Length: 147
Ligand SMILES: [Zn+2]
Image 1 (cartoon, rainbow, N blue to C red):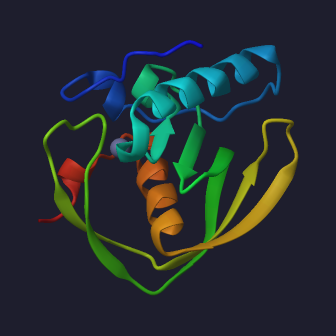
Image 2: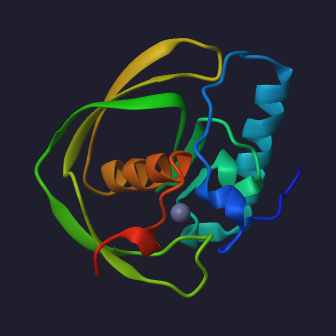
Image 3: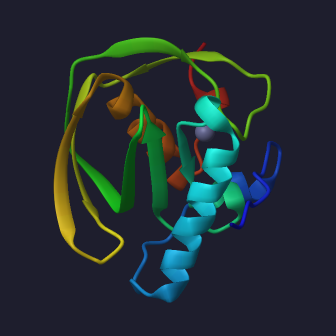
């Protein structure tokens, strides 16, 4: 287990743009273990975590929602449809809750931890979590959303 400290605003690392992963190696496995251990430590309030939130500026993110774990590396949204508006929180923005409108359904392309290219279609809450975490990879926080 390696629970990392989650960076919080106004840490400038949270505002950087992440770079793509190029090596699917032991170091990446260790980063994924750190993300999982850190996220699990937050219990049910933690449903997603991105690498920049633990200080690593790479395009890696993990979602953990209702027992389903998804790892996405170098994710890209191919298509987005519909809209959903809900209140979101963020482990990096303690105490903040912001009403955010996001796509209802997304078609995502990403790499697995083994470097295999996959495509997923996600709806509802999982689609929301993925969009939230992808914002982190671009230095965007819920505090930036119109509210
Ligand atoms: Zn967040």
